[in-house]
Structure formats: C-alpha cells, structure tokens
Length: 343
Image (tube, rainbow, N blue to C red):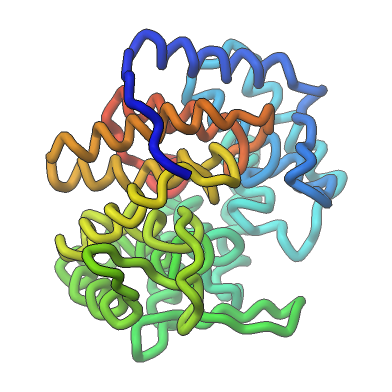
C-alpha cells in the first residue's frame, strides 16, 4: 500500500527491465519455468500455457527483446503441453493450446478447430470462454470465425447487458463484471463488430447500474451485488478502466482511476492480474484518454513500485515479467494491455 517517491530515470528503468529479462532467461528449466510457491497446485499442463506458464513467458520475452531461442522454446512447450493437456481447457486462450499455436503458427487448422470448438462455451468470459477465442481468431487472421463468435457472444447477453457465466464442472453460475471473467472482457472482445457508438451507452448503463461511489472515487464489485473489496485488474476499477477506459464516460473513468491511485501498490505483488503492474495500466490508459500528464506520472510511480515487489516469480499474469512489461509501456507511453490489446 502507499505510493513510492517518483524518481523516474529512463536509463535506470531500462536497466531494471533488462535485469528482469536476464533473471527470467537464467531461470529457464528446459522449456518451462519454476513454479512459485504463491502459484500453488499448478498442474503440469498449466506450466506450458499463457496465464501461468511458458507461453506467457515466451510471449513477454519476445515483446521485451530476449535473446533466447523463443521459437524453439514455443515448439517444445507445445509438445510438452500436448502430453499433459486437460481436455476441458484445451480451447481456452489463457489455459489451453491456442496461445502456443499462435506463438508457433505450426498448425493453423488445429487453432481454427479450437476457436470453433469454444464458440458456445458456457463460461462466457475472456480466460476460458469464447471472448478469448475471439482475440485468438483475430490474431491468427481468422476474420470470419472472429465475427461469428462475436455475434454469438453478443446474442448471449442478458437484457440488462451482462452475461451469466456457467461453470459446469463446479455446478456454479455467476455474473462477473471485470475483464478476466465477465462483462468488461466480453465487451472488449466485441470491439470492431459492435460500433463504438453503440458500445458507449451500453457500457455506461451497466457501469452506472453497478457503480459503488465513495466521494469522488468509484469501484465495482467482482460479481453483481458483491462487495467492492477488490481493487485489481481482474476484479474492480483498475481492470475496468484499463479495458474500457476509452469508451467510458469521463466521470467514471476519472473516478475509477482515482480509486486505483489512492489504493496504491498491491500487497499481492508486482504482476498483471492482481498486482501493481496490472493496476498501473489503468493509470496509463487514463493518460492516453485525457492527455493529463499527472496520470503518466502516477503510472510511472506504479512501475517503480512494482520493481520494489519482485518475487522471482515466472509467469505472465502473476510474475515479475508483468512489471517489466508495464515499465516498458510507461517508457513507450503505450497503454495497450498485454494479450487483450496486443496478441
């Protein structure tokens, strides 16, 4: 919690990014990375995929200019994944095979088949469901499939504009609002199919209906009617601002960004999903939308704060590499969130 003193020096920041990359390169174990104790009960297949495993690390290291043989690593990780794959998760962008196929481009027909197989996944969300498959299809150039899945996703929304996620394995339903599992991620995946002028009033209606105000700050619960006890990318204002900030009314954008800023660095670590770097993207997005330099300064403060939290944790969404990606984004003033905006 709290805000570090901002002493932004680009050469020092570049050095810190390079050090994170070098540490990741040194920690490589075959074609995967060690499992951190905080990422408990990691399955063999998860060590290969985008969220917790090799695919995410390879994608990030490619973005950051690593000298490793990343193409060879991706091919080896795909082979290892196929030996340990969880059938029910195979089509998931973040927990399945598509990310490895996007890295290798070794079997586009298999990638297309997985995209199509996920069209009516009852978990209507980004991580496991068809919203993630839409992003995969676009990245692969499968335009017809991307449009069809987007139209199906759109048809599945409830009259109030939100989706119900059906977790069949756990006999559980929920109505999530954030980017990882619900509304914000799904709407983001519909960009380009639904015009922005139609998305804006829809987004405003849902966000105002579920906003919880505290003075000049606002937050959103993880699920409809839940507590506003999360201020993270995956759940709460940071993720909603980072994902939909350019389509939100200004008062909600600024209030959500202010919530993120006042909450400060997250105790959970430096990562993207529920860490300081992920929250920082909300501040960088607010700078992109408003042009107000204070938000860039605040984003850079979060980048420096994330450097103070490094854990030698090697995954895209929970690990140190997220801090490196965000710091580089602050250098480049590039508010695009990893995977969601650039895959």
